[in-house]
Amino acid sequence: MSRTYTFKQKLRYYFDNTLSRGTSSIIMWLAILSLLVIIVFGVIYAVSGINMEGEKGMNFFEAMWQTLLRSIDPGTMAGDTGWVFRFVGLLITIGGIFILSTLIGVLTTSLDEKMEQLRKGRSMVIEENHTLILGWSPKVIHIISELIIANENQKKPRIVILAEKDKVETEDTIREEIPDTKNTKIICRTGSPLDLTDLKIVNPDGARSIIILSPEKENADTYVIKSILALTLNPKRKAGKYHIVAEIKDEKNMEVAQIVGKDEAMFVLSPDLTARITAQTCRQSGLSIIYRQLFCYEGDEMYFKNEPSLTGKTYKDAVFAYNTSAVLGFKDKNGKVHINPLQDTILREGDEILSITEDDDTIILSDISDYKINEKAIVKTKPKSSVKKERNVILGWNKRGKIIIRELDEYVAEGSEIDIISDIENTDEIINELKPLISNQKISFIKGDITNSAELEKNNITSYDNITFYKTYFLI
Image (cartoon, rainbow, N blue to C red; front, side, top):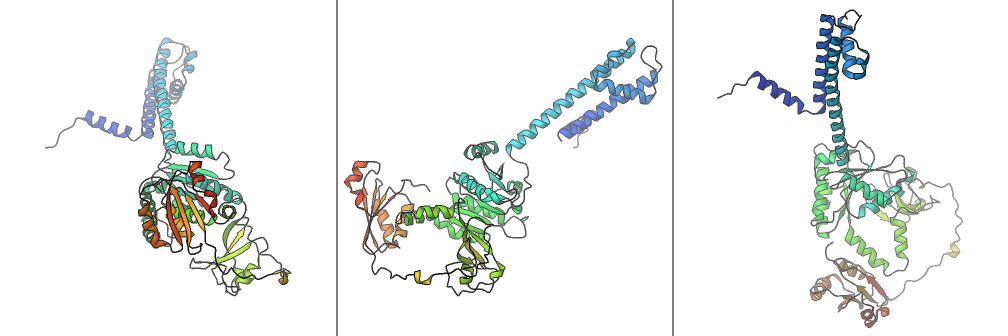
C-alpha cells in the first residue's frame, strides 16, 4: 500500500536532496534567497514609497539597487534618515549578514574539503611522457636519485609515484632523502596499483615507462604480477604497448610473470642479480667499481640507439663509427641483444647499437676515417693451460648464498673448496640441496659467530683466496 506524503514532506525531501549534492547546491539556494530578499524589499520600497526624509519614493529598479547595497554592505545604511526607512534597512542588513556569513562558512568548508582531498593525493595527473613508479619500497629513493641524474638533459622531466602510502608522508620522505631534485618534478599519489580506478589517476597510458616495485611483504611477487595484469588487461588501456620494468624476488615466479607480461614487460630477478654480482666481484678486485659506473647514471652508462646510416654495414664498421662512445654490441628488431658479435655481422634495419657513452645524447657518429692503428702493438697471448684450485669462504648465510655458490662454480677449477661460516642450523639439508647444482666445489659448513674476531682468527680467515660476507636473514 502506497503512503501519501504531505506537500511539506515532499518539499523538505527535495530540499534535503539538493543540499546533499554539495557546495554548488548550497550556493544556489543562497543565491535564490538573496534574490528573494532583494525582490521582496525592493517591492516594499517601490510600492510604499518609503525613502529617507525629504526624498521622494523610488522606482522598482532603484529600490532593488538600494536593497542590494544594504544586504551586502552594512555600512551603507549609516547615512539613512527617517525611522521607518532605517528599520526596513536594518531588516535588509540582518538578512544580508545571515546570507553572507553562511556563504563564507560554506566556501571555507568547501576549500578545507578540497585541501584535504589534495592532501590525500586523489587528483588526476595529466602529465605525458613521464616515468611512472608503482608501489613503494626502500629501493624507490635510489631509483628516483638515478632518474634525476638521467633526466638532467631532458626537458621538463616528470616522475609520478602511485603507492598505498599517505601522499604527504611520501613527499616528506623524498624531500628528506633527496633535497635537490634539479629539473625533475616528482608527483605523488595515494592508491593501489591493483585498482583500475587508482591507476587511471596516474595516467599510465601517457607514461614513457612504468616501474613496478616489489613491496616488502609476503607474496610480493603476486602483488607485482597482479599490478601487470591490471595494466595490460584493462579494457580501456591504450592501443600501443607499455614499457614495463618489474622486480621479481622468487625465481619460481619468473615463468608466470613472463607469461603475464608477454612482450610488454621486462623482469629483474633482484636476488639472483645481486648474488651474481657478489660472486663475480669477490673474485676480481675493482670489478665492483666498473659495475657501479655502468649501472648508475654518474659518469658513463650503456644506451641503445638506432642509427639508420649503419644499416647494411658490418659490426666492425659500427665499432669504428664512434669516437666518444664505445660500442659493445647491438639489439636486433626482435629484442635479442648480441654482445661483441663477429666482426663481419651485418646490421639490418631496426637494429639498435649498444654503447657505453656519457649520456643518451652523446651517441654521435664521428667523421674520422683513419684511426692510425699500430697493429705491431697488438700482442696475442695464449690462455692459461690450467685453472688454479681455490679455497673460498662465505661469512654468514641466507637464501641468496645458494645462487652465489652456483655462480662461483662456473669460474673455479675442479676440486676447489668453499667453506661457510655461520651459526645457522640444518646445514646438511642445505648441502644436499646444493650438491646437484655444482660440480667443481666441495662445500663445508663451519659453526661460528662471524662477529667474533677470535673465532675468525681460529678459522685462519686470511688463508682463503676470496672472502664473501653475507648478512644472515631468511625473508627475501
